Image (cartoon, rainbow, N blue to C red; front, top):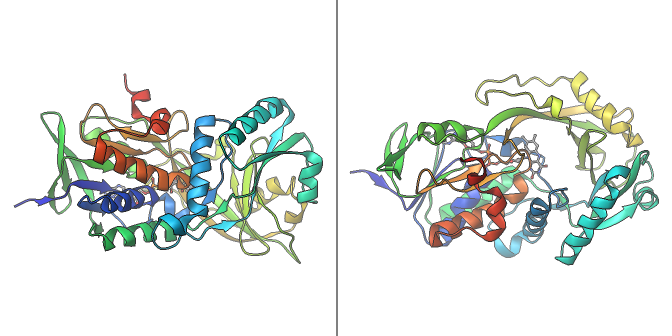
Length: 374
Ligand SMILES: Cc1cc2nc3c(=O)[nH]c(=O)nc-3n(C[C@H](O)[C@H](O)[C@H](O)COP(=O)(O)OP(=O)(O)OC[C@H]3O[C@@H](n4cnc5c(N)ncnc54)[C@H](O)[C@@H]3O)c2cc1C
């Protein structure tokens, strides 16, 4: 006799574990499969910044809810997520000032906690921040960072406590359809029958979807984060990003900073199963030097670590979340394009709503796979 579950979730990153927890809590029988281990994909390498401001308002709306979800984790979710409140500054160049201030006003009106700071106010907050070429910044007091591994493990443990079956080391080989509809998943150790399958396999979601004759426009790109330690005493610092200067950073324990690149040129297309995982001290220092042009405390900071992983990018840089109209019963939750950790609680909730009611929340409409399907 076949194994059976109401819902099969493929991929135990932060997206899939959140889906499993929300579904189990709603009373569904859930099977969560990962070909490796919980958070062994990009979730496990992510510095887990949770912040709200993007030039894209739909994304900002959702990200603001994501920040609140992590801030208030203990009221809603199982275990812990490791939320640390640091605040966050997004440096804005002069040419984008008017549009950004309009966006900030709009987001404030719908309750998002963020404000516009002029350059003088930025320097009051961070005295060694160079504001050359900037008009100001968007400041988010509730932004911070979490521990994505801990988050995924907490969701998984919570799901398991409510009866979900979590199988690490069991790979989905094929999403199986009959007369068009999804009927289950062929794994490397047998078939599991289910009329609902959530494809949350990160960059591998594309190959799984293609096997099911429903290609998805997701490709993996390499993404690295350098970790440095400043010499001497350190001052408090919010997270910071600056698209023109090409970097983002977040503080960690005192004196330690995680620095990532915002230069598209470094997002090299890769095979997520076989790619170059070297990221030398010289490369970490190149990231440090870029960030030190803005933040002088980083001059002379020394490399102490690195994270080398990948993004699962879509053509417009936004997630794919929603039912795939070509394969009834199949939901895509992948292509998170390097900013998906902050959405995990909301995406899990949306997936559970779809399974229970057949409807997606309206706020998720901009992310529907339909936008890439002829
Ligand atoms: C270096 C780095 C920095 C980042 N910074 C941030 C940030 O600051 N803030 C933010 O919000 N986001 C950030 N992100 C992005 C965020 O971490 C990801 O979008 C998010 O964690 C993706 O989670 P996921 O569960 O969708 O995918 P993944 O974590 O990649 O999980 C996919 C899982 O699917 C499994 N799988 C694949 N194929 C199969 C199969 N056939 N059968 C079974 N299992 C399978 C894999 O083993 C894997 O565990 C960053 C990412 C990286 C790499």
